[in-house]
Length: 326
Image 1 (cartoon, one colour):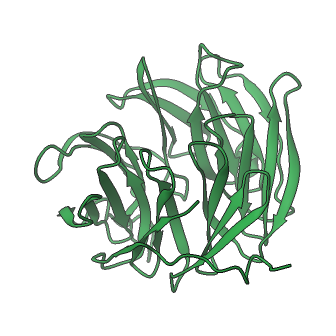
Image 2 (cartoon, rainbow, N blue to C red):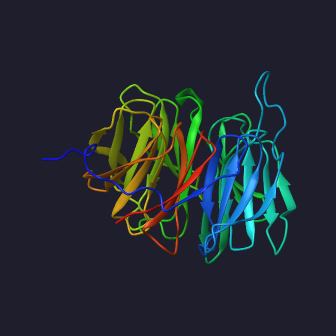
C-alpha cells in the first residue's frame, strides 16, 4: 500500500513572489477576491486572486524593536470585511486599516498587547466583530469590539507558559455568547465563556512538547486539531457538558508544526510544517497528501472562503504558494 510520502501530489497552481523577508501570515478577504500577506520585516501586501497580481504594498509596519537583538514585523492578519483589515505585530499593537481603492490607511490602533508569538482572532456575527488578543502581561485575554475597545477581560493561568494561539468562536451549546480558546506553551488548551469569563474546560497536553497552534471545525466546534514542537499532530474533541477536552488520535508526522487550518466544510485540514512541507489530512486523521514546494519552514496557511478547495501557504523562503486540492 502506498504511503503518504509516496503518493503523487499536485504542485502549486501559482507562486507569489515579492516579499523581502520571511512570510509570517496569509489571509483571504471575506469575499475571496484579495489575498493579504505579511512579513517579518513589516511588509503588508495585497494580491488580486483573479489575476494573482499585487495591488498594494506597505512597508516597515510594526517594526519597532521588541527586545534586544530582535525586530518586530507583522505576526498576524485578520480581515474584518472586504474593505477593513487588522494587522497585529510583535510591537504589541493592533492596527485597523481601511483598504479602500488604493493604498491602505490606518484608522485606529490598540497598543499594550503581548509581544510574544500568539496572534489575534476575529469572530464575525450579526452583532458585529469580536476580537481576541492577549495583554502585555500575558495574564489576561482581552475581547475587543470592532472599534478596538475592550469589552471583556479574562484571567488566564500564567503558569501554563506563554500563550501560543487564540481562537474566538461560536457554538450551539452557548448561542448567546462567544467562547475563546487559548493554547499555552505547556500544551494545555483552555476555553472560556467571554460574557461570564467562566472557565468551561481546560485540558490537552502535547506529550511534553510546546503547543504551537490549533484550529476547530466551523461545522462542529467540538472537533479540533492541534500542533506542537514535537513530531505529532493531535486530534481532539470537546465535551462542554462534562467540561472535558479529549484527545482522540495522535498523528505522527515527524515534524513540528507552525499552523493548522480546518477547511470550512469540516472535511479536511492542512498543516504547515517545520520540515518545509504542507500535510493534508481528513478530519478523521486519514492522510491525504504531502505537498512539497517550500524550501524553508512553512509558517502560515489560509483557505479561500469562496473556493473551498483552494488555499495559500506562506514560508520563511519568502514565497507564497497557491494550492488546489480535493
